[in-house]
Image 1 (tube, rainbow, N blue to C red):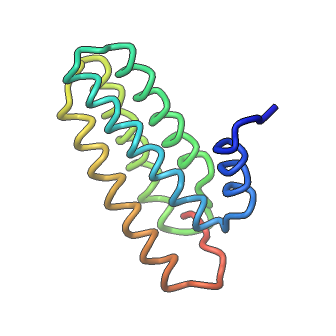
Image 2 (cartoon, one colour):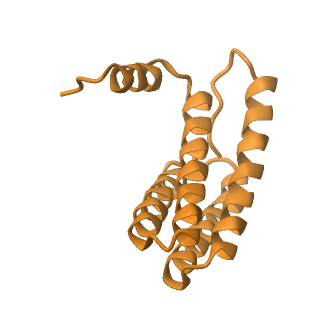
Length: 129
């Protein structure tokens, strides 16, 4: 049961967002969790690292699972998402920021590309992949 006003707001935001907005929210979440994990590496808080990299990986896995394979771009995105997850795994194993930074860089570029596509297709549903 959702009790906090913030949780109610977040649930409402998800339920009323367009597919394009939801996609951007997923990218934002993965980026945020990746950055929080990097903070954990600096702080040597390995529970924080593992928890947040796990959350980022879950989001990237969702992006991979929900790709619309009817579009050619999915053939490019699928291996990229797999590589991003690989980088997060390596970052967690090595407790190294370099791999997480690389993964976040790709996610930020993808987010920007999808944000631009969403602006160009305003009023239309943005299909993922």
